[in-house]
Structure formats: C-alpha cells, structure tokens
Image (cartoon, rainbow, N blue to C red; front, side, top):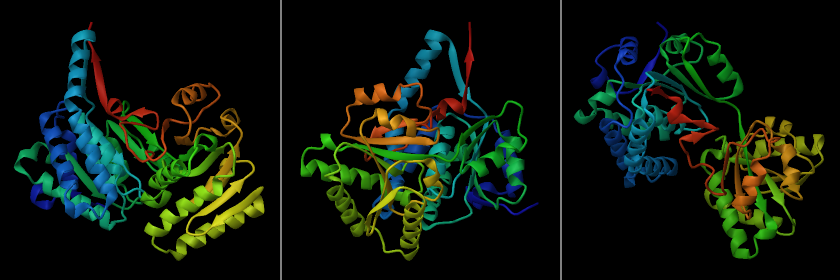
Length: 405
C-alpha cells in the first residue's frame, strides 16, 4: 500500500500497521457526547499546553486557554443536552467516524475540529499536512504523551493522526470510512476531496477559500490612546500565521476621516518592527502586490516599511487572488456602512470591528443582500476559535439527534 505515517498515537500504543489500526478505529463503538473520558483528556492536554516550556509558541498557548475554557463550560453543555432530552425528547449521539482533512497554512487548526469531534464522542481520523513544523512537533509530543496515559486508553483506541502525500490513495480510502468529512483548504483541494466516493449518508463540512476584513470607524476613535489600542488589536489579528489564517484581516474598510490613518499604520508598523523577523521573501511578495495594484487598479501606495499598506479607490475580490498576506493591508475608505454592502461577497468570512456599536452592526448584517460574513467580532479577537465557525455549528454537524414522540 502507498506510504502513510502515523503521527499519533505512538507505536507503543498502536502495536499494529497503520492500515489495520485505521480500520479498527473506524469500527470502534463511539463514546457518548461530553463523556468524562473525553473531558478529562482535553483538560489534561490544556494543562500541558499552558506549561512554561510551551510559551515560545503563542498559538499553542492560545489553544491551551481555549481548551481550558471549553471544558469549564462542559457541565453547562451537558446540562443543556440533558434538558433537551427531558423537555423535547431529543437525544444527541456521536455520528460515528469523522475524517478531518486539515490545512497546511495554520499549524494548529486541525486540533480545533478534532476536539469538536472528540467531545461529541466520535472516532476521529485526522490527516495532517506533510509539512512538519517545529510547532507541530511540540504539539504532537504533548498529544502523544497524553494518549499514552492509562486513563486515556479509550481515547487512544478511537483517534489517530496520519500524514501522507496527497497523490496517493489514502484520501479515497479514508473517505469510504467517514460518516462525516471535515475539509479545510483551498477551493481546489476541497472540491477534490468532495469528488471522492463516500458513504451515502456521509456529511461534508467544507471550510474552503475565505478572506477576512477589519472595519474601523475612525471618527469614533477620539484619542491618541484609543487609536493605539485599535492598532494593537489589528496587530493581534495579524501577527500569528503571517495572515495565512482565513480569519486574519487582509482588507481594512476605513469609515470616516482619513486624517488619523497615517498615525494608525505607523503604530502598526512599530509593532511589526518589534516582533516580525526580517524576511526577503516577505518584502518581495509585498513589492509584487504593490506593483500589481498600482499597475492594474486605481491604487496608491500609502506605506512600504515592515508592513505594506495599499489604498484602493474601489475594492474587488480579484485583488485577493494576488494577496498572500505577508503583513500587507489593502485599505478601502467608505463613507458609511451602507457603502460597504456591495463588497460583502460570499467569500468574506470574518469582520473585526472597532468604533461601531453592536446594534448598528446587527442592523447592517441583517440585510438580505449580504451573502458573506459569518463572524463579527471585536478587532483583536479574529483568531479566537469558536465551535460556531464559518456559519457551521461544528459540534452539531458531527453529531446526530434522535427525536422521540
């Protein structure tokens, strides 16, 4: 059979070849949603991710905090599920085997969807990217250490992480085992997996190409201190993953006066200069996008330092095909929220906002003509993962609900 590497659990736990193990995992009886075994495992992993030795990787620390918060609310979720069962006779159960096809651009994304599948009691097969980064090595050491604990044998028998080249048959093999496929990646990759045969009732939850934006109402940012806080928030949404995460803002819609714009981006540039390592590749990619926009769009280069800021008279999604992140912002000035409606296409995922009342945003988002936007969060929280993602309830999507009447 074509080459496949098991990343976790370790060989001492598996004691068999990958093909046998994968099929054995798919054949296991699932656990119950919110089982004590699953919750205890997640709590253990969260604790390990919050150890001082992991501080060099802020993304892993953020994951640890998310896991800790998730399990703290476990009793509330369990109580809610039990109340539903009593009041409406809806019983929630694991779906079965969930296969996760995960992206290469965000090192930790596969953990989030896996945890949702795990917490709902499913057996999980996770295909991780072939690129093995230092952060992934640290993460998988912690996962492997946890799976070897005697208390978590039920988890180790129902979950596996594998790595293989996209060109071999394994995606087709795993698709045949799946009761649900969670697909992370670009449009082409997602469509390629969806074209593979699967069970007639298998569910596909697709997270394909998306982009995100920041929405800043400059007139509501009164003081220099407030302006600095908004710049700091934008940088928090930018720094991790070099804007490769779909929820990192690449576009900034600037409402109101432009007089504060230079000071705002100077602050962001100062933050970038303190923490972004110099990179010839990044600067070259910035220059390519700058020159392309100047040549093909009504554009003005506002800043080209550590960060790049390109002002466009009008925004169109064609710019995003050339936008590779790399600390580059495309800025579009709009007079009001109403002027923003025409830009909110189906690929716009997250808007991080500053200087706008939530009631105003509710009215704006509710307009039927807006086909995009699945998340609206305060600026600085765009990378905070939630079980409601891209418009999908991940936990609900990987569970089934039995109704009794």
